[in-house]
Amino acid sequence: MSDPTSDPQHFQPQASPTALFSPDQPPASTTPVTAWVIAGLVVLVAVGLLLFSGRRKSAPPANTIQPLAAYAANLPLAQIAMSESTSLSGGKSTFIDGHIQNTGAQTVSAITVQVIFRNDEQMPPYVETLPLSLIRTHQPYVDTQPVSAAPLKPADDREFRLIFETIPANWNVQLPEIRIIHVETR
Image (tube, rainbow, N blue to C red; front, side):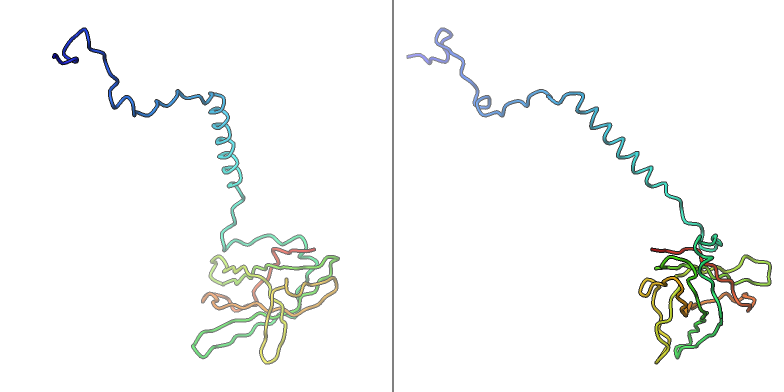
């Protein structure tokens, strides 16, 4: 008997084993072009918003004297005095104490000041920006707190303290100028 695969009349092609188990071909892309256009527009809008929101006004350099806050005229400073203290470790702190009164009609919950230490050397002054702290107690030591802990109501008169760990060596030893540059009210 002859082999049926060698006889051309009896030969019938059979499917290859790989064709039986091969995965289906992925269908052609069915995503419409409009979906891609919309996705591209969404990405462009998001990038535009990020760029626009990133264009905030940058803060001025630290040594730049800022304009007075609008409410500053309602917060006169009085009885300004300076003192210093040396710690056991040899560090030196300088204090500026005084009184602040709220003569306006709003309650003040935060105050930022700039303290300007001038010199006699025709050089730019040393400017330090810091929050104003109110004196909470005097005994057993002077303890301060932020204005937000005890807001200044209209007609309030409170003691304050500013603390400095470093003062420039070329400071002219005159009372520095204190400028109220930011006030939060409610």
